[in-house]
Amino acid sequence: MSSSTSALILTFLSLMSLHLIVPAFAADSNSTTNSTLILLSCGTSGTIQEIGNNRTWVGDIGSKYISQETSETSTIPQNPEVPDVPFSDARIFTSNYTYAFPLSPGRYFLRLYFYPTNYSNHLASDSYFTVTVHPYTLLSNFSALLTVEALNYDYLIQEFSINITSTTLNLTFAPSTEHLNAYAFINGIEIVSSPDLFSLSPAYLANGGKQTVFPYDSGMAFQTMYRLNVGGQPLGPYEDSGGLYRSWNDDSTYIFGAAFGVTFQNDSNVTIEYPKTMPQYIAPVLVYETARSMGPNPQINLNYNLTWILTVDAGFYYLLRFHFCELQYPITMKNQRVFNIYINNQTAQTKFDVISQSGGIGRPVYEDYVVNTSGSGQMDMWVELHPDTSAKPEYYDAILNGLEVFKMSMVENNLAGLNRVPIATNTVDPSQSYGKRHHGSKVNVATIIGGAIAGGVFLLSLVGICLLMIYKCQKKKERETGEGTISDSMAVSMSAKTIMSASTPTESNNSIQSAPAATFRVGR
Image (spheres, rainbow, N blue to C red):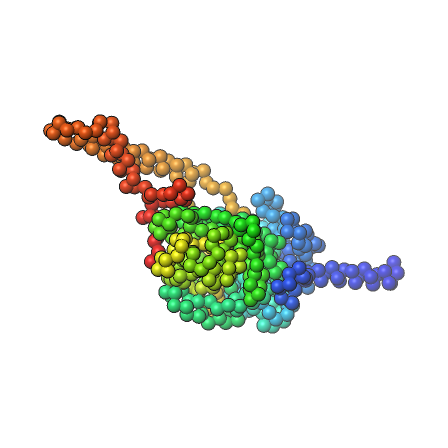
């Protein structure tokens, strides 16, 4: 082989090793100039194609990003429920280990991929570790196994937004010192350039709707807890805007109670047009083309809140981003649909009018609110919408197109919450991650059906007793007065109708199916 040929081969291999950093924003004029995309498949070598998203991952064996500390690699038995990339291999650490990524200063999405299982002679239950990116603590004494069991998932993707001020991102995994045989592991690492998504507009404290601006610090880190395409289908990384590769989940899992409202898409003659002051990377057009509203019946809407319950870590500040866009006629003018926004029993916004804020139908707008939580462990965060009647709008209704929830590193640059505790009851599944859900338990379904049948039998028995008493009273009255004005069968029929109407809300022909008002937390 000639020296010139050898030089060409070496040059080609060098270029391949740099394939970890590829342009991420070339297709979107609303993106930033920084174009870093790192897709690192841990514990393997070579390149691997990601099925579905058409992205190329590169193994970390021999990579310039790994440090000199000792570590192990492991190949995982194939699980049909888990994608091969990047979950088919893992890197395991029994001592502190640091990846060093040379980057330009700026904000980045960091996504960590975890598939908790037994690795060689390491049990999944022994994996407890801390993850840091100086000066931020992302995870502490973290058990991926406990988390997937609590979420009923197979794998996890933890997403963070971090502002890097130096030229290197040092990602450190440290096994816990509190657990015997503790180790750390990672299946995949993704780093994507990101604009500063949090400084473009003011965020308001949820403190009674007083519009108090929350002081933003560009040095804060964020953890993505939820990213929901409200009223629409889940969106994969390649359906996102701005080359940010975000995933958007379906929101129906988190709706509280029986009142789901109604979902709909934009009218065929309504085109989504972003305002000049709003970059398209805020959210993809697909988020603004679908929505969920309360429904067409004002009597029902006034008696409940359209509510989402989202499980979060207590003791942190959270930024909630609400995405709005009016999609259908006749909502084209101000004061047609006006509503209030509540977060954790706090009024975030009163008299919110999408048309007034956005400037017209088909024009997106978003609003940011910050809420503080107290305590420790997990808690339910309530997000609620309710019609505002004080402005006498044309429709008593509310609408939402998208919702994002971010945990904020307000204290000691910390984002680490406690491990989730698996529970036996059917509660709302939190989705800070995008792993695949298991199928529902047949035992729980049987229990629910049995309980429903038993409740129905009890209710029918109670109604029967009431009808029998009414019937006897009516007969007694007829015998005493001799003035039976209607037949016995008609008396029973009318009494039954009276009982049923007292327990069922009046609905129009086009009304949504709703539980009784007493079931819901009604607007303040």
